[in-house]
Length: 128
Image 1 (cartoon, helix red, strand yellow):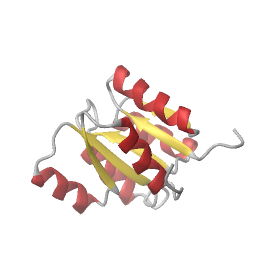
Image 2 (cartoon, helix red, strand yellow):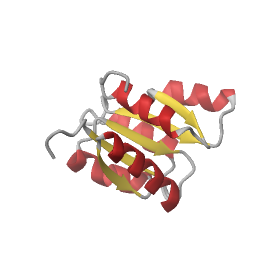
Image 3 (spheres, rainbow, N blue to C red):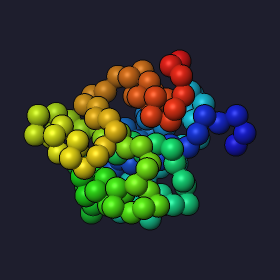
Image 4 (cartoon, one colour):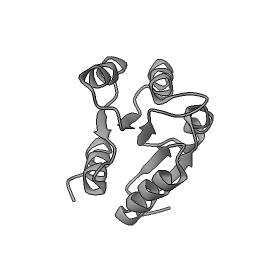
């Protein structure tokens, strides 16, 4: 896909939210791949080779915390930018994300413009 701003892997177990994020990022010019949970993300990440991963926290099989930790532990994925998305935004959650080394933390319901701006920044692109 020439002219793409880069690849984003959208990980969320909720079909509606996954589709919402995908549509917004595609309209912005990103190439988007999706995963339905953390394990699916880990299975796909090396093939997709995303610049940024948006990662829901509360998911079956493998939650966002564990997924982000495994991404950071693997030298092949340690540098991929990770945006955690969660309805939980207590200080302890923000600190946990910081300890894991995630690059951004957005609270659901999120503003699509804020999500796009965050992904653009993490992908090394100028503001829209």
